[in-house]
Image (cartoon, rainbow, N blue to C red):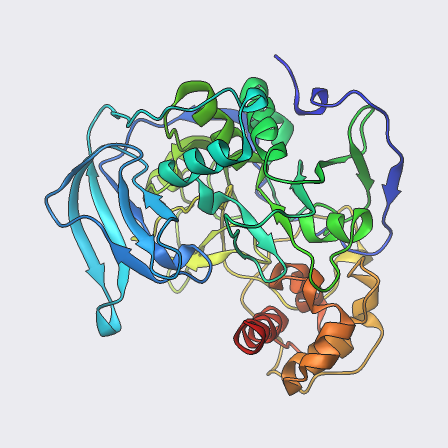
Length: 436
């Protein structure tokens, strides 16, 4: 089958990054894929999408197909969120002030799909591509920088960026995951080309053919790092990013006319009996793929955590959680250690626990973080500007170029145990509030 690196056959220079840290953990997924049948229950969780206010379009008992709209964003009603499967809406769970927390679907054994009039991307117009992505509910797969919000359909970004690999701990091998998705990737990239006046940039690890070649330790796979080294974001500019598996989902829409949200995820970590790849439909209960890989027997007094994503940036969940459209990995472990010892024995694989090794301390002004953030910004000063709420300094120090995930490794090695990702998130929220 075609491989991911076959998308572009032109040679490019290698961008070599020295700053960062590869965290080697036990529990890497073996190169086998388990095809999971359609599960009994799926859910779409509004809080898994960045900065939206959901307004419901269905009620309990409604029959839906894969691609049927469930809710829309109050601020931008054209942005729909659709069902990943067919079945019956069994519950609309609400939180405080009746905020919609999840829309739960009891799934049919065989998925039925809404049909969309999807054109051939290369022969279509930007307006038609946008229309189909909005109607199908796949528009939320496109994320805008700065700030990490769902892209504005009325904008024309200066570029679209796709990271073709993930360098995070125990991350899935995207060449393996996407080995049968070449046609869908090509269609997805062709569709995205219509949405920008600039280029669609594909970032890959060092190989013999690609558009942008990257070499170095984590976070070399972060799309924000790749943007920084290819086309940095200046004030007033926007770029869009799409997860590489979601590019295939978009391509599938244009190749089949259906919303097919199946993806291959890696179930990893020290508490997994047989770490492996599992093919599931986004929105599935996390229990389904976890049970497919197995859980190690617990001893008295022990517990584990389920994380949707990797240990640095993932979201802790429990047995009634659901896998969202942005996650390609489930990690099971005790927790993240915040000590920074990995470079002492770089070949050793670690089984991390929850011990913080002492309480949280004041932020230490040090050059330590510069060794782990391969971007030409001053992380400690940007953090302090965010803490102080100084918008001018935040702008000058690079707030437009970063998202919380870009500070995850700095947070991991931080002797002060500062929740840096939360600090950056607060800074971004302040920017949106003050400048919108």
